[in-house]
View (cartoon, rainbow, N blue to C red):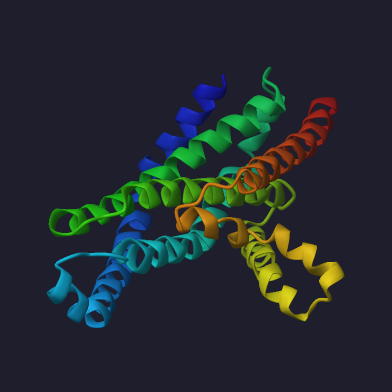
Length: 254
């Protein structure tokens, strides 16, 4: 049943045409950013390229910031997917069909999560192809690119689990999307707030979303970062299941 729900969520994004609009928007915005990063790199490294005929540092100076911009862009996209899957369906009373059906809330949440997650990976796929344009002429750090891609995927999965938890409470999609966006931004700003905290409270920055993605974007795999994203996703998905389970019991009593 989980795969059935996931397939339904994935196909729903294509049927409504929303995913194609988002894909076009992502390609336009990130394509322009990619072009700007390439231009900046060539201006700064032109003399080095002429003398050494090498693309040393191009992955760090182009792909790293491109993925960082992608992560920020998905702060806007992820709330849209989450609210459309839970909040909008609650408002349209289609969520009641799930809650009153003979399926568990775990299957509902996990199925919806997988469907939305795959939809976002579909949006990421063309972005992952951009570095191939660099690889045609220059040397690309494949390891850093692959590790950075992994970090970006883990970050988006964590953002989605947080978004689904918040969306499970609201009945208004606009309010839910705005709340999710503000929450994601605040969790990101925890790292910046660390500058104003005493050393004893600096541990707060460990909960910042982008803080744990920096190592991945630099090509470094840290077990602590993987545990953070995995544990955060699990906790928020579990809380979403508990929240929906309470609503399911209430609907069935009625």
